[in-house]
Amino acid sequence: MHERIIKDYFGGWEGKDWNAVRNQLAAGFTFTSPAPDDHITIEQFRAKCWNQAEFIQRFEFVRIVSGEADAFALVHVITKEGRRIRNIEYFRFDNGKIASIEVFFGGTGEGFPSNAR
Image (cartoon, rainbow, N blue to C red; front, side, top):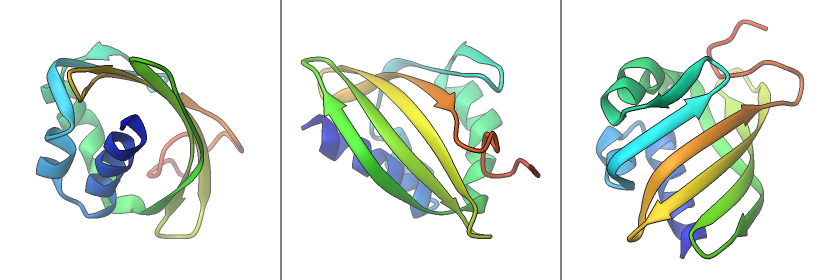
């Protein structure tokens, strides 16, 4: 179940469809990343992060490991320029929705799709 929610969430990013992303998020959702973002709200997440969708071509799911109410996803973000960005994303769930995401940037240090590195 968690794997499907995660893939639907990322599918919204691939399809440039905010409503598809938003539909996977629980009320009270928070997002944390090294960008720096510390438990920002849905509205702050959209304002700060949604512009990254235009740089994303697709995602490769290397591994998803689920617990009872959480999951880790090792994801490769493939940009339109063909760059590969490696992230670990920690998801917590509440009633079939994503309650929070913590993102850890990795790989070559490119960080996020619009980063010029």
